[in-house]
Amino acid sequence: MQYNHEEENFPLTRFESMLKTNNVLFFDSEEFENIVNHYLENGKIALAKKAVKLGLEQHPSSTNLKLYRIEILIFENKLKEADVLLNDLYLLEPHNEEVYIQKANIYSKQEDHKMAVSLLETALELTEDDADIYSLIGMEYLFMEDFQNAKFNFMKCLEVDEEDYSALYNVIYCFDFLGQLDEAIDYLNMFLNKHPYCEVAWHQIGKQYFDLKEYEKALAAFDFAIISDDTFLGAYFEKGKVLEKLGRYNEAIENYQITLSLDDPTSFAYLRMGKCYQKLSCDDLALKYFNKTVHEDPLLDKGWLAITDFYLKKLDYQNALYYVNKAINIDGDNVLYWKRYAKINDKLKFYEEAERGYRKTLELGNYEMETWLTRSDILMYLGEFDASIANLEQAKEFYPEAAEIEFRLAGLNFEKGDNTTAFFHLDNALRIEPAYDIILEELFPGAYLQKGVREKINLAKKS
Image (cartoon, rainbow, N blue to C red):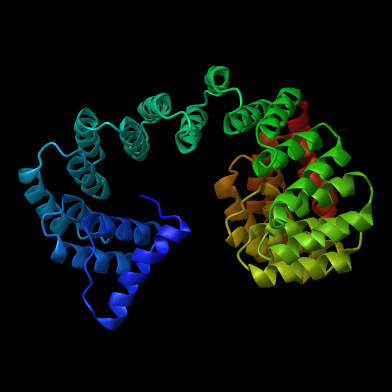
């Protein structure tokens, strides 16, 4: 039972007054149940426990209060104690579906989801509230990653309660995971035939069309979602994204502005507006909204990257470096920040800092070949041949058949005077792709002009 504000005041005030004064007041069992439920829904577990304890002292035979006690024990992971109490309760009320539901919760916590499903199916035979049980069974199948059965049970839930939008979201989640986009659209169309003003279904079918790049259909779906509920924030966001894809940037901005009027400002809306203004070549407005983005959410990497890229596009590397440094100070483990940091320093010819950036990028797990190669070239420019070779040898672990790596290893070893190793890598490079010999010509012209090297290259190109 939900309290409204006036109903809530009297029993809750009396109960909390009793806790403060230690005066024992009497409440009937239903009042205790409502008080406990209120505290649980508001996350006040300690007060819920006190209410259950006092409630059972006054009403020791109350099944519902016993079930609340068990629910709290399960929440606290005191599963053995909860199981003992459930077994006692089962002896008294073997046909109470809540006993099976709480028993299923215990098995679910123990990751025995098959047993949880079995118990919930028994509860389904006993209950008059099918929708909740179907939803719980669906969740257990999700835990088992059995998306087909999960989908079926969430659908059954919707057959009983068509307004259970969490079940509808879960149905679409299952379709998405199974890669069944067309089937998801068919299901949503069937659902909308019965419930034509369901804004959530229109929103979801719009997202499906968006993923399929059918933008006009997606746009129509989001329009219907807005017609069904003109305060539906998500529909305006998604409509804005579609309009961007269609190049209708002014209309996209209008939809993002509507979201700002419906709820508190979001960094996402500001970011998208900035991107739209950038597409419209309104640079001052673009920068204004990018700054609003990072002010609203300083930890949003896309915001900082948007400002950095804004200045990069204008070849203003000093400002770009300033903003990417601010981003790194906030999150020093963000690989996207370090990639920009390295490229900007490279443009500014701050090679030692650029090398540091590429090294950090690799340490954070970004193993793109371009990163390995650029770092190698910078190390070579700095005269650190051994470090450059070591870097390329690491790169070979990820790209064992890359001519770009082999030609560089050949050139570096020629520079060091290790001709045996150099020719070994040259042979590898020519076997993989002889046309990439331009790498050797540009980076190591001295080695390229050696007679033995030219002979090998010419022979490989002829064969």
